[in-house]
Amino acid sequence: MLPLVALVGRPNVGKSTLFNALTRSRDALVHDQPGVTRDRHYGVCRPEGLRPFAIVDTGGIAGEDEGLVGATARQARAAAEEADLVLFIVDGREGASALDDDILKWLRKTARPTMLVVNKTDGIDSQAALNDFARYGFSDVVAVSSAHRQGIDELIEDVLAKL
Ligand code: GDP
Ligand code: MG
Image (cartoon, rainbow, N blue to C red; front, side, top):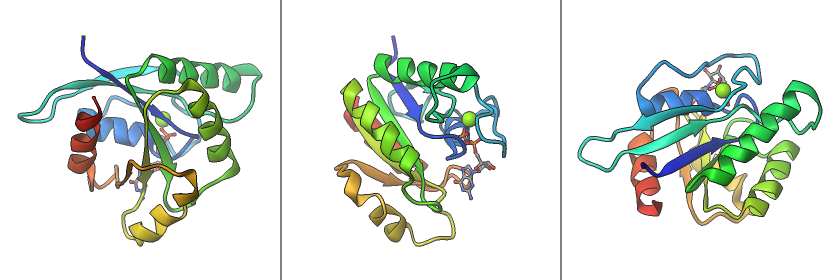
């Protein structure tokens, strides 16, 4: 069985876009509307000459416990708990939000190895974007642009170093 990497983060940070960049597919639903990916969704990243690993895209975690949103959050938590490595995806343009803080709290409870991935750093100062998340205290941090495939190869190398 391939090692499993879970993509976790609030809606609209670019999890599905990153899933597509890693699997080179157009499979995951990418949408402007937050919360459009509602199920767990599996794929495989097959980097040339490197070890393949499985990826699970999750619906956004919207901080509520009722209804469809709550079910999506539970799916995301289940995905994180079964993963060998969690990529905590945040939006480098919007910076850290209260919802990111909440997600980080339960991610720490799952105690899975976690890397911080700051997405949407195309056309902005990526160091400033990273600094905004410095208080989260991650030693493993990567700035990427999933939409423009920037930083994706570095991300894959960092992921493989952890698997
Ligand atoms: P998800 O809800 O976390 O799965 O987010 P999506 O992958 O559906 O993306 C939400 C929105 O952010 C879409 O409009 C994407 O085109 C946009 N987006 C995703 N990644 C990037 C990126 O690296 N840069 C920019 N500028 N936009 C992005
Ligand atoms: Mg999505």
